[in-house]
Length: 69
Image 1 (cartoon, rainbow, N blue to C red):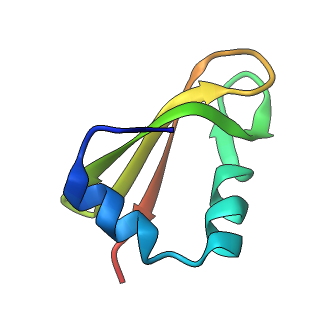
Image 2: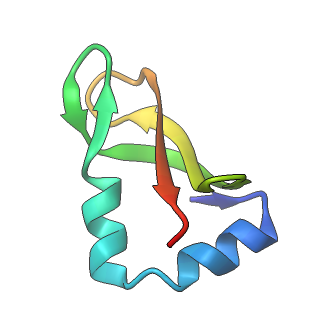
């Protein structure tokens, strides 16, 4: 994981570790379906936190939005 956005990293740190793992392992890839995100960055988004990375299975770009509460 690379941290590009400090504010996003602070938000992500507030998410319980077990929930973080569920999110990381539940990302949609247009080629593989549900997959795990790897080599991801954490970015702040107007809706919450945006994880941008690669599909563990095929290497395609994938993203996962974690909405603010």
